[in-house]
Length: 280
Image 1 (cartoon, rainbow, N blue to C red):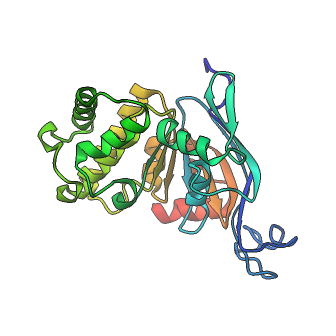
Image 2 (spheres, rainbow, N blue to C red):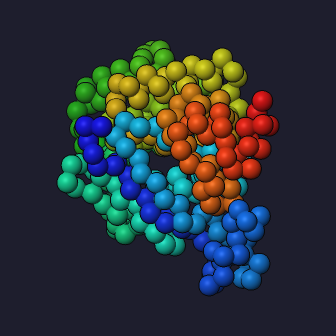
Image 3 (tube, rainbow, N blue to C red):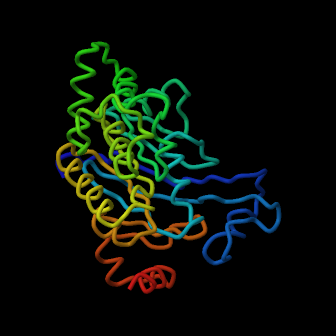
């Protein structure tokens, strides 16, 4: 790779909900079969998660509901703060942040300009009180754009790029289909040309034909933008299509990690074998 520094360096990232105790980590996880501490009742959402994410790479997070996938994304997108561990984000060559230690002002700037998030539920990622173009304009304004004409032109271009007719720019998101709402979320997310995109179950609940168009769009944008992405999904087909490498999570722990094709074709962990077998 041309850039030999990871976009993200995550080490021992941990999030415990509750008061926590000295036995939380040893009493939970894959071997224990639970992420709830039997001693203090705290929930270990994730523990000791470590990985690197490289420029232009798509990393998959796979596992059933409650495995910790979305908790990882919430921490990295700065919607939550870790109990322990570090996550270093390279904003520019030679300039990085420990996401676990930054103040709220820097966190807000990174969310507004360097990160993009696409949620499973469009109501979490869109402002339904403004137009489609207004949703994109909000991101562009946060990124420092002040020209009304430039914002209209950029918003129109992004809508077309995500297969939304330009004449729908002034329509409310509530008038859009589920697939169009997801595409609008993507347009909003990429508006400031972020270096890191998070995609959290973006095709769940959509018709198969709509899913295929969304996935094709994500791959096209990744090639054009060169942004690193983290894709969260319980759908092995989505992971296989999008991700070069994959982490498999269970009860808040990474139980298997490696090249996606290798994991899906020759899973080593019994849990991964179960997931792959259930999808056949």
